Image (cartoon, rainbow, N blue to C red):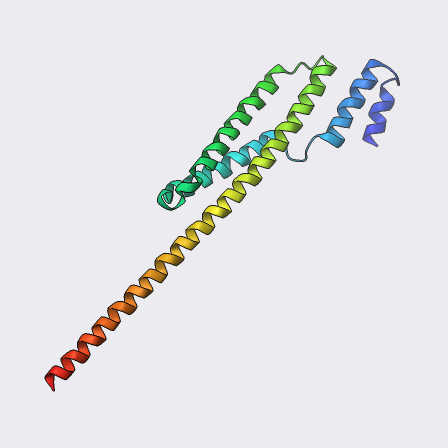
Amino acid sequence: MFTSAVLQSVGAGTKEYTIVYSILFYFIFIHPLVSPSKSIRRLKIAVDETSALFNEHRDVLITEEIKLTELRADMLTLIREDLEVSRRISITSVHSLMIFASEKKNTWKKAHQYHRDIGELRARMEIMLLKDAEENERRLVERQKVSRQGIFTRARQSFYTIM
């Protein structure tokens, strides 16, 4: 309804009609439901949380350091590119608007992919931490068994020497 009202207010076949139609097409079909800026903010939060997890357990997670550093660099590049795109836009140029829309869509796609990558990295890191904790607990159980066996052996020896 809104779309048809807007298109009727502008004469068909005119330059304005094409611009309005292009803008409406962008917002209806191309523009993501979550803005690229919001996707980047969510990505930054996820990277920061994963970095904090890594820093807490650096000794166990050292193998994931390169991937985390790559994702941080990708995130910073994405933020820079998004700012550059926003500064280059010219509202009076249809070509500029179409390039802007395309680059914003690419920014959103990259942010979404990086967010997925950081989620996978965080899951791998959590699994590594769980495996490490499990190994530590098993070693503790073994030490306790050995310690108790030693106590029982000494107690038996003491018992037999007393008799």
